[in-house]
Every structure is written in C-alpha cells, then in structure tokens.
Length: 153
Image (cartoon, rainbow, N blue to C red):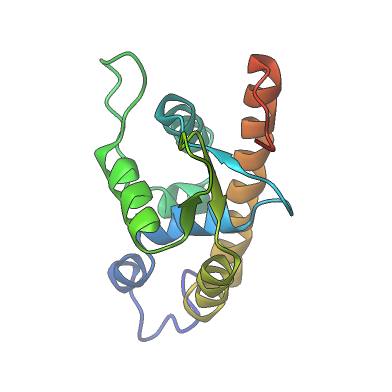
C-alpha cells in the first residue's frame, strides 16, 4: 500500500505528489526541538547516501530520486543538492548566522510538509519517512559529536 487511495493513485502519481524535495523537507522538519543543522554539504550528502544504502524497501521508494556519484571527494547527488536549494529558496531552511554554517528549519513550513505527508502517503510510507528522519538526526548527532561541532551555534 503506497498511497491513501490505491485505486486512483499509482506509484508514479505518488512520486509526482511526494518527490525528493518533500522527502528531504520532511526529514529536516522532523528535527528535535531547538536543533540546528549544519550547512556542510559533505556531511549532508554523506548522511543521505548512508540512508539510501541502508534503506528498507519503503524507505528506498522515498529516496528513489537520489542517485549518488561516488567518484569525487564525497558522495554527491545533484537531486539532493537541488532539493536543499529549493527548500532554502522556499523558506524551510534559514541561515540565521552570518557565516551560514548552520541552518534552522522554519517551523510553520516544516509543519506544512509533515501535514502534507499525512494526506498523500500511506501509513507504511509515513512510518518509513519518520524512520528516515530519526536515522538522519541520529547520524548527524553522531557525526557532529565525533567532529566536535557545536550543534547549537
């Protein structure tokens, strides 16, 4: 079961209504309270690639837009980069500091994305989306702790 109304919605319809930008937006919007996000593309791209490598079938469906080239210094997905750019332009990601090293997530925009998921995705895919968000923030916390980065800058 992929969508709320499987008789009228195919996988193609699902992916056109819930694309990679929304997947990334949901993951970022499901952040712990008061948490900021690094703007370091190496870290973000690496974590999303790890999520894709470890994905269950439902999670793989959600992450299907992202193809990672691995011949560079770090894994890189043009579609992930495009999603991050669009989320910034759309007002979800906000650089609140003068050096743009940390992002925060605009709460209302984040809530809108999470609400939209409940109208489009099946319960199985919502659970997969929530699990991806949990893993993302856990991996980011571990990475930043290992690197000694200040999470609340």
